[in-house]
Length: 127
Image (cartoon, rainbow, N blue to C red; front, side, top):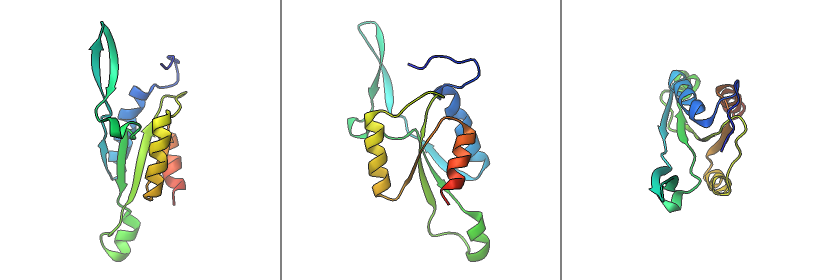
């Protein structure tokens, strides 16, 4: 569990900020709910919704590159990003690392971000 730092966001803080940035910048995105909360013996546990999708990213986003649209009309292809959002000190789990490998085999840009600024840098670097 992440320790709370007074100036650094947790994953729960980052996800809404990333969604807002994606929307403001013309991305089509969807949030992937990977777990549900279960109570077992009086304790909260996060249980995978689908065991086959353990490690799936928090968000999948498609970019409509308006620069190309001005020249050639609507694109037949959109860049797809699998976005794993982390707290300022978060690291990928084994399942997430395995999912990243699968995504890359399909040509999906997989990025791990800990802030909106890092998201913007990594998307700009994908070109």
